[in-house]
Length: 149
Image (cartoon, rainbow, N blue to C red; front, side, top):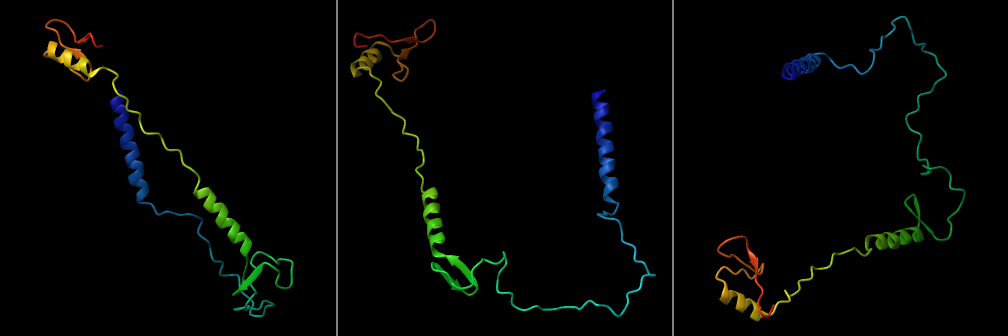
């Protein structure tokens, strides 16, 4: 039953996608031009093409008339030198913060006497120094206990 429902759902979804791809997309209602409306030739509106240079007050008047101490004027752009210096210092301090570095893994000696390895290796042919075990004839691996252990 699930397989039949899945196949029907896939077929319906495919049909919807294919069917919608053939229809034109319309974002808004088409505007209808009214031929009865006439524009009067005489109007109070004046078409302006260019207004000239507006002195660069893009964010409103700054409240002062002349150059102020601490500011420089370069081709219409005002900027405080102290603000750029402070931004550079603060940005450099943020970028150069100390990062946490994981310490290197501490490799320690196994703590066993080297003569222990020699004794176990001489006594058992299947001795494995890495795990300090040997394989007896019957049963699982056993830990080697020497007089030097």
